[in-house]
Length: 370
Image (cartoon, rainbow, N blue to C red):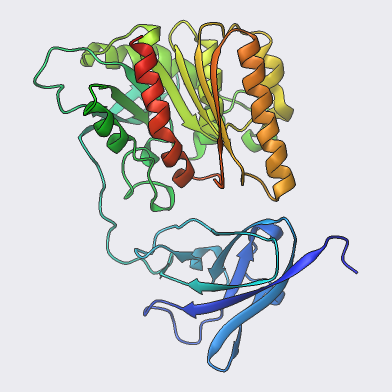
């Protein structure tokens, strides 16, 4: 007898791309079992010309899943054969799920199209703090070259995901350039400076507290010094910026949301605005909450959000929401101007952050001009 009430889910593999190898075997890898790609009990069976798999899943599970041909290298992908998001299902009752595989990651096709809007410049900048070259993407509004105006600047992390679907994780971008272009039509112009990840260094650069995920060697202090001592002076010298704290913001999601909170509060003399999308507050056993007691967020404008489907199940997601609300309450109680948003039906991904971003950019720009 199962300890959790479960629902049978029938998965139907309705179609596969033309380049699928003959005699391929198909498996379902899921978040319930750590995305293991070739579990025998999760193999599709061919019956009457159709591949199907039926498994029972605990009720309330926020199930993420992908089809594979037996390994992580042979997972399904997007139509270009690049990484795609896992499929999602909130398990509330028995159901059937039809799966159309669009591509395989080990069999890539043509190059995906670029989706850049506006003027985005790519720069390589050496960081003496990190002893490394970093790729920086700089968005300028259309009116920049024809005016002498100065502009607010929003600094962002995970730069490959910010402007271009061709470079972004799972082929989904934040659409920051499109959001900025739309606001520019209303007279709310800005620059956005996006820092690309240093590959495997993301889990150290973006994390301020010791944790197993960063090998107990957090690097946020060094990364923050790069942002404030090398990157910002470079941007302010090269471009016409409004360099004061009221017109300078920092934003990101997940680990990027965590480093935005940390850098933005540690250097509140530089950043007057913080955008913390789905911040990873769990890091270091929630050490962020204790650290906040040592900081003065008064006067800072801070945006915090969390989706309702960020977690393994609906109970865990509700707890994650509560933790983010506690953070917002603490910040407000210490004098910060805080906005908290619940992303209804939103998972932990670029699609959700892209939907919530335009309103955040609007708040940053309107509040910096008030």
